[in-house]
Image (cartoon, rainbow, N blue to C red; front, top):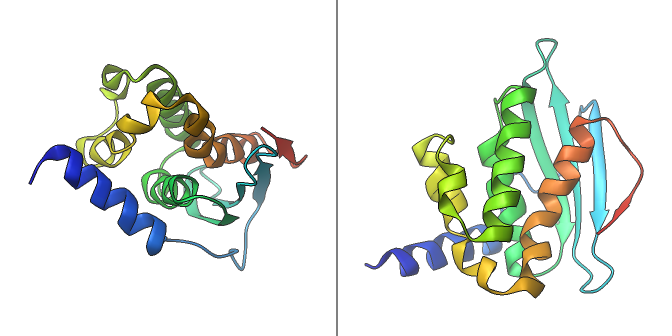
Length: 152
């Protein structure tokens, strides 16, 4: 199986069977982002522990397969990360998807890097970059404890 096919299968799996697609019963951070051009919406819920690590993370969203898959993968990648590590991963993913440069993911652990790299083909389509980055923008805003709805 080719890497491209593996990546396509990963995105398809997460878009049809999204993980953590629910509002958490208990959360202390949340933010919602909306893309007015295409209608994608991602509301991210985070439960930070006292030690400021992401104890739980989930999303409620609607939109295209790329946005839903990105939301799902994001929750898996950021769960149990410290705030500092989460910010680093968010910035790395955003830079990766905007520049199609996999080297910016070099500091991310291999299992997470594989999931994030599945979006490499999205970078070739500028109109789809916002689909992939929208939940990450919401997560960053939630971590900063900014609750104002984001129009991306």
